[in-house]
Image 1 (cartoon, helix red, strand yellow):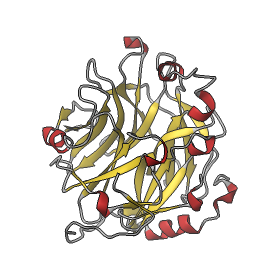
Image 2 (cartoon, rainbow, N blue to C red):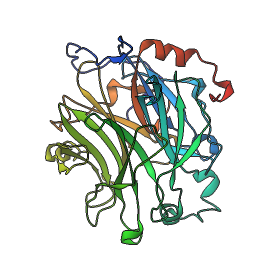
Image 3 (cartoon, rainbow, N blue to C red):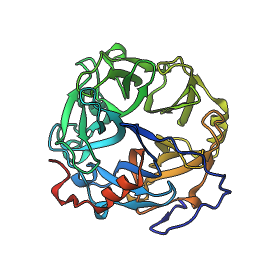
Image 4 (cartoon, one colour):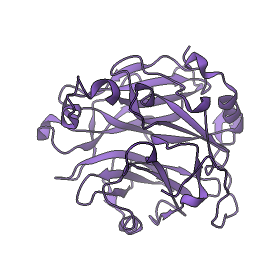
Length: 353
């Protein structure tokens, strides 16, 4: 894949003058987000692969493993495995204090594919978990034990790949995911969403985005200059990542053709799980999870653009390094103090209180 594993390298493209990072305001103080946390899983055939892994970086380019590349959190409930993470920094509505929330797909292929799901992806899609796995923390190192939040009713198939964005206008969080549904006999999946203020009570799910007669999965949603940008994967015709834009979080969304052109050079049907982060110099890095080979060769591949609006992402393998292949996850901007706290923590307690 061309990504150098385990070697620190510097960006090979021109670096623009850094912009001021968006500070996180808390009690009159401001945290400058100068580092990054990547929550992900690993491509393994054993149950330890489908658990919570952390990677950290000081610059967004060169990534380091946490806990020696072993899980930092474990799933003990539901399918006893988790995948497809999102992580967010938010405020506790009762205390007003900062907290962090991880959400994930409740699924273990290692435990369930042979017996529970009879080697059938269709059966997982239809009969998989209607819940999302959730952890919460005040400091990114001491986490609550896993809990399950049932968001989908029995009309839903498996709830895949949650993501979350704060809605400034409504003052709540929009959690979105992909599912099949009884409305089309569990055929092509669409993107659904639910609102929450506390990640405990969730509104009735509604459709965020669908494309008739196309299977749509792996949503990732971002705001830039008052517009909303939605990455999704279309499973066929074309079998590619798409980028769409809207004026409101809930749409309607319109496809950005310039992004389609920037993706023409990569092979169809080999990439999924888009996640993006705004870098310190103001550009955006898009990571796509490559699954075109079996085993350890899988993992994220980086693309960089000046803005989401431009849609013009350039593949940038040589500018990034990973200690191993990170699989389907999300990046959170963190402070240098938080970065060091994660690095220094003893994760042998599995990270829950």
